[in-house]
Image: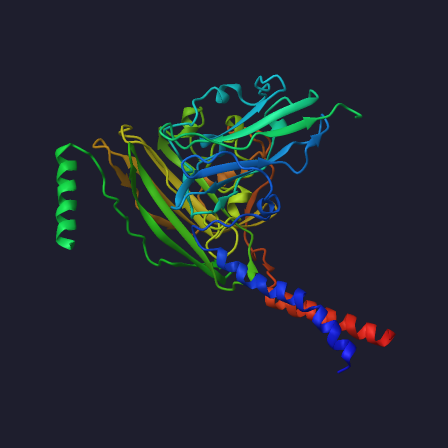
Length: 191
Length: 268
């Protein structure tokens, strides 16, 4: 073997190390132990909302400025920052999660979804058909949420800066867990 | 120490009973054999389905049922694009009925933002849920390998009941390969407890499941009623793909690196 070839082999060692480290990733697939998604990892710098009784949440978009037409897709994650396992219920998004969007003057953005549904109490109570307890170990993140396009639910065509916040609350006995307040800029056409 | 703890627990139990605290001890239902059940696709065993829990549920003022089903692949390197479908087939006081929709209808009914469906797909799990460990994933068995549900309602709803038909399916576009199903449910009793329906395995879907699935209109409107997008239950081999193992992937890349090194050596 030539000396030069040995040098080339060692150059690939870090690549091999990374590849074989990947085998251990399966360990995090234990039941009840939610692993953070890649998206959440990549956005580690995004600020979290205030922790309430061991839970905190955050939302983020893939960019800050949007034109008046393109989708405004928002990602959402909840983390257990307490030192005991916590249960977050998946029973349909709006059963225990709410999206608040405000315009620059602080007024709620016009809701274009089902207005009668919007007026229901929050968190919703009573009868659950899909009702799934998701156990979060300390430090675990639940990001198994659809990244909704806010424009499916709110009128956000007017240029300006909108404030978006997600609120999670399982029952009226619990305090609401509010995400970071995300600022989204809708630019004027052609700007 | 153990004696003291035992006495303390008995005292707590006595005080709770004396105070009239009403609670229900979870009662499990038997699952007809075999459990785990072999899962075949086109005559080939692709794994097993294990009902790990089916019991009454009570928490605070709510009662209902809880169930968990876990699929384990025979060949861990195969992926079958697994999904779960669940229909509410009958009931009194169901969510759909409150909105003017009688069973059968697919679960979940609504509770997406704005009272719409969570997404425009007929599956029980949303896509993010289906691929998340502890939600739609049973350990290392891939997306759609876990089903869990704990339907419940106020224990004051005496006489309310709900019946479910649930199915594990393998999906190829709009073609649905039925793998195995089961029926279950619960009734709210006058004494504020719940009673489980007997669990029953199904080898083929009933009209209660095929009806709302083939009628699925792909909109976010929980009432549906639009033009069906074309989902159909079909036979034949399940769609499957091979998941490259990390070790195999590594060896492939090492081989490619070897070719690159050799080519470079020839240039020199």
